[in-house]
Image 1 (cartoon, rainbow, N blue to C red):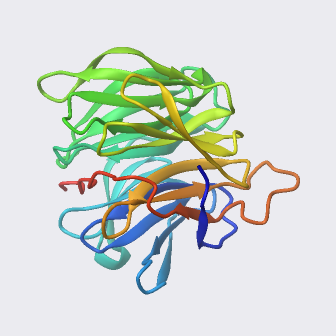
Image 2 (cartoon, rainbow, N blue to C red):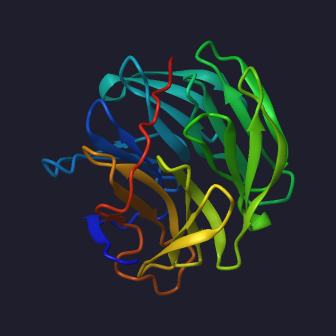
Length: 281
C-alpha cells in the first residue's frame, strides 16, 4: 500500500508526535531537537510555529484551550496562543529528556522519558493527572515511545524502541496497566510512535525502516506503507473523518537525508482513526 502525499514540507531535525486537534481541526506536531511546536490546518494550509525553551517530546491539546507539553525537565502547560506557561510537574534529571506522550480517555497524560545516550533503564513512562499528581508506571525502559489504547479501553499498547517490540498490556480498574507482553516483533528498523485505529489495529512508524506497519489486534502484520524517507517517527489519524494518516519524519543523524526527511507526510483515506482525548487540565 502506497499513496503518500506531502502535507508539510519541512526540514525538522526530529519531527515527532503528530496529534489531531479535533476541536480546532488541525494537526499539532513537534520538532524535538528544534524545540518547536508546529500546527497545520489542512483546510486552509495555515501553519504556526511556537518555540519552547527546552527540547519538547510531545504537545497535546488541553480541554480548556492551550497545550500540555512534555519538556526536558518535566510537564508544562501553555494557555491559548502559547500564553501563560507554567510547570505542572518539574523533575530535573541530568542527561534525561522527554519523549513521546499520549492522553488517555480520562484526560491524564502518559509521558515518556529517555536518556540522551539512550542508556537501558534510563527512561520512564509516567501518568500525570491535571492536578499534577505523578505515578511512574514503567521505570526500566530505554526509549519510551508510542503509547495508545484499544477502542474499548481494555488494552494499552506501548513501545520501548530498542526492544524492537510492540507490547500490549491489560488495563485494570483505575486505568493502570498490567500483564505486559509482546504483541508483535519488528525486524525492520525500530518501532517508534504508534496510532490505534477504530478496528483496534495498531499502526507503527519504523525508525530506520522507511515504512509504517499495521498490526491486527492479534499481532498479525496486515498492511505496509512504504515511504521514501528512512526515519518515519510517528503517525496519527486526522482530517474531518479521521481517515487520513499523518506521518512525521526525521533527518537527524543522516549523512544524506532524503529531500522529504523532516517533512510531514499524509496518506489520504488510509483507514478510520479514533478521536484523541484532550488533556483535562
